[in-house]
Length: 50
Length: 499
Image 1 (cartoon, chains in turn green, brown):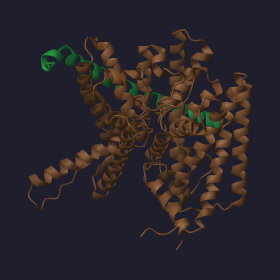
Image 2 (cartoon, one colour):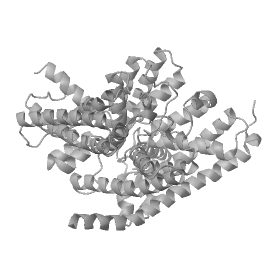
Image 3 (cartoon, chains in turn yellow, cyan):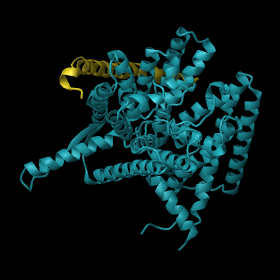
Image 4 (cartoon, chains in turn yellow, cyan):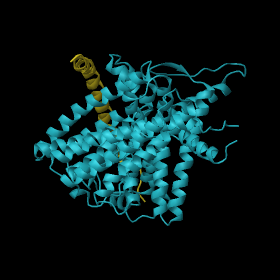
């Protein structure tokens, strides 16, 4: 029982960490999305296809 | 001169190896439970047989070698290398008995691929495989990704021996003062994420029309293979099967978190949120993901005309994440690489695979911290030429704490990185010798050695046997990061020619 309570405690403390990690990774995803959209929309101007 | 091994070393090696064999005997009870749950009686018999076989061998060895005194470094390294081979042979037995593999070698390939968290597969007719066999494939990914030794640390090993075997499994970081506590923490993090993502993926699957039991079965399997960056999937089509952008996004999240250092997880989980923004390794990792996606997308747009942005980005971003983290999940059909990807995009993806994820994570490859340190050393060298000769240049980086870059560190980083590059190349040359295009065979070899699992189609049940053996060896040495394997080989040689 003590062990289970200990694990619940760790999970409770760690849940804030889980949110921080997930949101940071999502932020990187959106950053990459925006950057690649700029590339996509200006691709034919930047790189002349043979 | 490297000291010769004595035959007395055998006692310690056999004792701990025997204990770890007992462990797999008990681990086989998990798929047995799944077999009973789904009323799969023939698979249940296969798991009972393999479990009893492993337990008999394990207990026999331990009874013959009851000594449990502390072991030395070379013994620790040898145990770590040897046990991975033994787990491959034992783990392959139920797979072979399933009838889904052409030969025992194919099932050994699959078992090593699962344990080393590679994800290359040789299975036939996966879509009709019994749940329990399929669960065993994914469960092996979870065991191997977390680390066989790491699991053993929880149960069997104590004292100084624990750390010596722990290092043999390519893990150096002690997150907590004691490796047993470190091992416990790693299991807690993984279990918490297992619960969170199994629930999320399970509900998403149900929303997509799966029955609850099937939805959660797929969810737990996807998590185990994703978190441990293995890339096995329940269906032949891998992630394509789900046809869902949401599943793509969730699995991408799982694999990035799986490829993140457990030391960073520890810092963030204990309230040091700033660490995620300051950690040098994580910064390099994210910069690398963004820049390689950008380059790969540029190459992809050059070879694929008239594709809409979302579809193109979804394909490229997912493959880069999959390659960089070493997971090997794919949301495109295997022929896609051959048909649509030009050499430039394939080279960028090969580089991403070769670099790998963070150190002290479940990911393979050179590891991003090593790449970051090489850049730091280059910066230090440039600084050295810019300042007067007598100036002492100190280069620091932040990884949980501020660390000064030392020559010893750089030497180790250089040795391991070069060994990875040479192994990628050797596998590529062997593939070329067997008639495959160089770019494709280098891609496949890098995928095997960096424990990624993406394939351009070379890996299939009909590939040459020599290539299967090459990839098994690459997966094994790539997972254990060379040194412990070399010590093990040295041990075998010294047994043949004792002083």
